[in-house]
Structures are given as C-alpha cells and as structure tokens.
Length: 80
Image 1: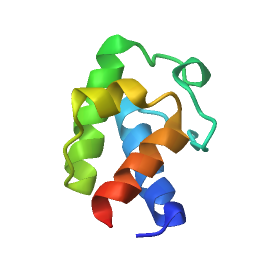
Image 2: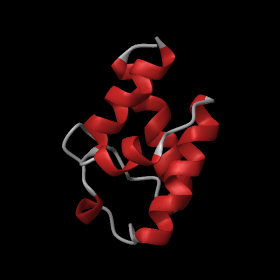
Image 3: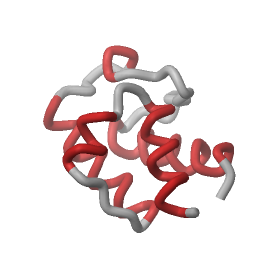
Image 4: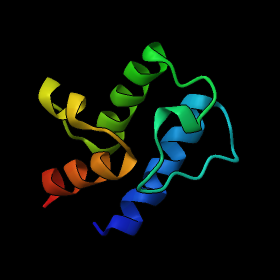
C-alpha cells in the first residue's frame, strides 16, 4: 500500500471519527489542527485506525506519533 493510499484511507477514518467530511490530513497534521481532537477522541481514533488497517500499535508507537506523518510511517512499516 502506498503512502497516498494510506492517506486516502486515513482521511476516511478521521472523517468518521470526528464526523467532519471536510477533514484532509497531511504529514504535518497534529491534534491542534482538528477541533474536538482530545484524549478521548485520540483513543477512539487509534482503535479505528487499527481496525481499518488490520494492525495493532504498541503503546510506544502510539506515544511516538507526533503527527499524522509519523502514524503513516508506522502503518506503512506494519503493512510491508
């Protein structure tokens, strides 16, 4: 799966979790960029991303995700 394909799928997950069809995530997207992205929404987001990509993140991986680009890198490594 290419980075572009991962971003396409992630956009759908973000739109579902935050109930906002206008969301378009990039490598630099961080929680402050999306209204309602709080700690509860973050847990919901991680669970939905894991389900969508059929992957499991370790606690270390989750805490190392400083932006969406880092999340994409981890997903890509798990899918390769």
